[in-house]
Length: 75
Image (cartoon, rainbow, N blue to C red):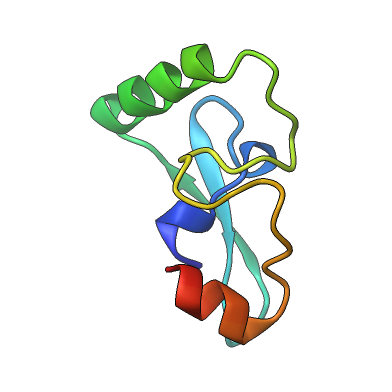
């Protein structure tokens, strides 16, 4: 998973959860203070966010990126 693909449901306030590509295992990663500060800034900029919205507004929340070519072109 690329960091720009993180969604709010993947963040719990102190950790992000990523799924490994090979085993599909979910791994929690503890964030350092600076990373949490950055995410908090995005929280304030997106008061009406949904759990399925992207944390970083690089990808559009209205586009379906389920096809690999679409996400590849967007990134």
